[in-house]
Image 1 (cartoon, rainbow, N blue to C red):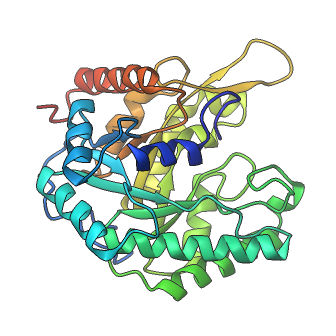
Image 2 (image 1 turned 180 degrees about the horizontal axis):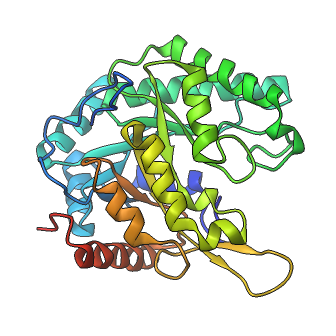
Length: 317
């Protein structure tokens, strides 16, 4: 998750509110307005305030984004949701994801029930607006909603994630979107294989994959081998990936192991491999997150576009 001092994911998405087909999972196709070809679908939060869908589209255009976080909340009326969806289609903007950040496997039962309801309402919103996915972490059996716990790697945790995810999907029965779990360093899914195992166990057409490779880099071995890790992720999970997060990670030179989340371009993540693998699945958004201000997002976007230009595998026109 984000480094200390950064805006939290919830805060970033709140600021944003203010201002493709899954092969083998039967989910919705790429949005009707999206162009064919290998276009870099980069997106991020919108800090600029806007009053209506066109203002939102204009703000995205000034940022050079062709993907976006969901611009409305679960209480938005049907007319508002439809207006934003139509504006996105017309402008060739992919609505990448709706965040449902909560702990649906919390050991505290009231917290767990509230989190499950949060996931259901946000999955329903994703379906209403045609987002590619609704995403959450699987949760944690610790007292912290996204914290580490030895129990997170037990069969009990795995089974609870399967049961809970099924209950969320079965209650909503999404027709145009999917529910996805973000990869994590200290909870399932924590590797390509554990994600694949979860994918098969959950066994729902409304379930898909969300990829955040930085969250999988939890050791020096993975840090220095992150290119191969990314290739493995896309080889095993690529057709099911609905959205990706763009961050970076830096191994500090002090004992014992210290890994810090940093701005794309200032760490060791192999973005050349990441973007090349992503280009194999046209329409899959890459969403910037966890940065402190608009200037930091601009620098991150500039770095990623520079790597994409050097690769020559994307239409950057």
